[in-house]
Length: 334
Image 1 (cartoon, rainbow, N blue to C red):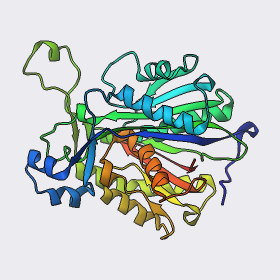
Image 2 (image 1 turned 180 degrees about the vertical axis):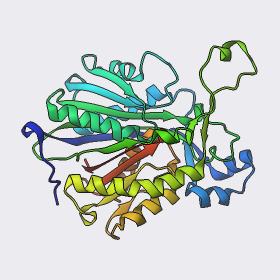
Image 3 (image 1 turned 30 degrees about the horizontal axis):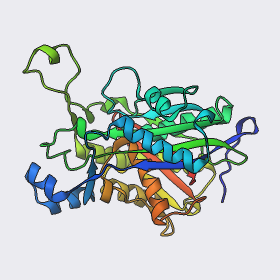
Image 4 (image 1 turned 90 degrees about the horizontal axis):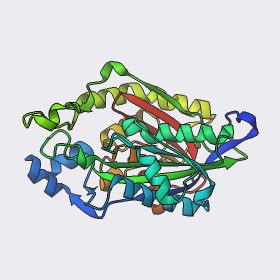
């Protein structure tokens, strides 16, 4: 069943190409378990993760984003000169300015495109997708490239038992273009700023970092049980609203592709939504780990490549993360 939401100005949007980049280095649970002092089985039981990818010296957030975007453009059949805007979602581009997007745009040869970054943590891809979709629907751009690229291993504490087994690196990208029928549903999004401390950096970028060797270097910190409780209690209504505004029922979906945070969260969300057995549920976290904003496009590409989902089918996407921010929309798979 196609989506039924109204199309502004007679023009809709769709995802017309997707690409991904997975770092070469595969890290198994045995390696991480030795580092944090737990059994390997504990990691898989708590997260569903068996392996993850760590980026090497040449696999920068820019290089990974460029590679993923080039694949998405090739699939879409879109030339760099046709891109009207490039939107990059990342919280691990550690240069305050310039943003990551202009660097990627230049490398791709899209020098006339607008280019900017957004910071919405693990929900960044869904936020950027909504922005890109609205630009295409409004006629601001004919094609928008959305990229999510993360090197979480640059900011996590490798010895932290609560986070070190979860996070990994990678990049995913999509090209959004015009369509006669809706291919990207309206976004349902929001934030709960009352829980800023649940997922946050452990300290701040201050001048003391440059002069005081005792100043703690900022690292990613997370209270996992609070994230789980919030996600499982608060996000099911958000997902239901995303289905409603898209005009589809759970049985119309071919796939459910949430942020790959933890398999326990994914299972709880799917159960709360009462998804039928016909809906494939992404489990890319098992091989890829939690790659923050990059996890959803990586999971989409994996499901299409493996045959878990078919091109043209409907998928419910849902991102959530530090802030606590969230965003969900139904899309037609490219």
